[in-house]
Length: 173
Image (tube, rainbow, N blue to C red; front, top):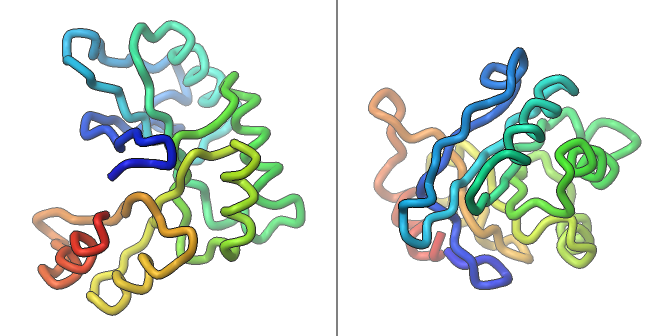
């Protein structure tokens, strides 16, 4: 699905966070031989040491990175708020913006998302939800601005229902 600038969420990706990078600089794969491929790095909430290690890995990476972040729901309970949290994250990583912000269902209203988009802090956002029914899935796509993508659990032990997947596909997600 294209973002506001016409880019697509890359299919090749890895998850980085405290577990992968808390004790050492992370290893990133070399994707230079893959034509037109960007490496999608999904950042999980992490402490300062892990973020410093991730920043070092990104500095040494020789390729194009699509950076997304799955913000913790606890961020929305703090008075300082999402914008300040994201600015601190970006400063820690030496980045100007995130390609995609994964927002949980508890996320603030559309005004906050629109402001983050306008300020260039994020280029797009995605819904992070365990919506298992088509009704709940369709509700995700009615938000304005609509999410670019959907991050949910879908595996052999907990597959999504075909109707929920169809609802996402019909919304071009």
